[in-house]
Length: 438
Image 1 (cartoon, rainbow, N blue to C red):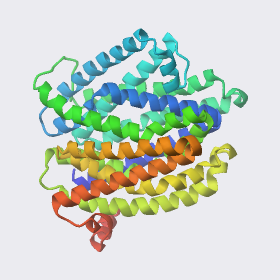
Image 2 (cartoon, rainbow, N blue to C red):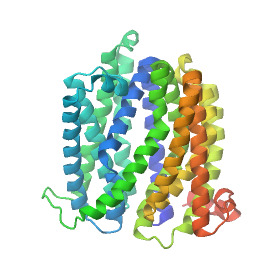
Image 3 (tube, rainbow, N blue to C red):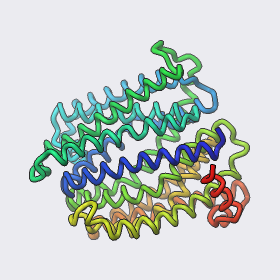
Image 4 (cartoon, rainbow, N blue to C red):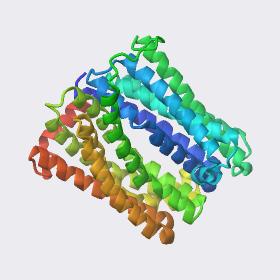
């Protein structure tokens, strides 16, 4: 399939996934209320961070090396299974041996017990393994299959949480067991997603159950994954450490409201995320012809993101109370503060996918470090006094800085003006029309 068709397929399936994510978010918000939603967001934020921490950037390396033909799907699968299993066990025993009870509670919002630690570790394993398998499909340019697998989890969570919401007593929603039910349903969704993904890999005969690590160049794989690892860790701390700041200085209720604004804003990133995924695969396989295409995709992405942001705020601003409940009224104002940075950051997602695919991941790392320093500084400065409003302002500033750096570096490398990356042309409009018309 062509680059245009791959992006179109990935984008359509991103929309389906986002629709289920939106429905599940609404149900979780109404079921758990801001306090419970805050606990849920804090827990899931911690799972994502631990996955990055113990994952060593493996999923990004798998996409790059499998797309470039340096490892087979069979090798990628077994490396993923072996590594995620070992890293998961290591994390569990580390957690149990260091008696990090208070740290576990601070990070996850859940009391430390062996049962909770085991569930948390299993959650991390499923999410990490799922990301690695999805990386195999993306490297093979199986974007339709990848997209179908991708919406299994949000669909399962929507059905599960929906059943709880309509069948249970809402008055007990803040009790920790109820929050645990929501988390267990989410984990079960990932288990189903991993199971279906393995089934598809076997069905297309990409992998077998025969252990195989031939063709594996550990040194080369680790070099790429290590750079991706540090970049991803720093980026996540930069853009999601505000969850822990809000929880530490204030409470889980404002965190729950803030997480809704962040989730709604991330809808704008559906197209950039689809483009970045496809670009990483295409550029890894053919680095020579994608700079001009990337510039075109930047212009189209910025235009669509800008229009989407305006429409999204107009809709969300008048429907917040109706959809989520009056407890989340402040979320529309927080979204307004986030939107300038979110719209601009859509370009960073596209350019970051290009840099990673072109094996220029050091650029992503450098930009991430600079943005993280700025973001953490504003978090310390603004969040203690202004709570979630300060977090939104801080995030918007760091998103903007990251985009400016990405634009300047890409423009200098390819000797083009930044205007050519921002402002849509008549040719771009025609390309959009052709894409829509098939």
